[in-house]
Length: 80
Image (cartoon, rainbow, N blue to C red; front, side):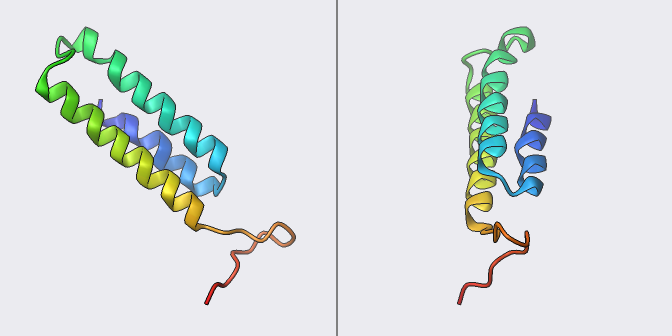
C-alpha cells in the first residue's frame, strides 16, 4: 500500500497541478479501499497508512504549486 505514494510523486515531474492533485486523490481513495482485502480496514495501522499517503499527496501538491513555470518558454521563473 505504501507504493501508492509513488503516483503523486511521479506526477510532480510534470509540473502541473491538476494531474498531481488527481493522482493524490486516487492514491488516497485506493489506500482507503486497499484496507478491505488486506484485512486492516479501520485499524490503527490502516489509519496510519492512509495518513502517510495523505501527507505524501499534500507535499506533492505543494511542490507543484511552488514550481512556477513560465508559459512562454517552459523555463522556471526566477523569484527573488
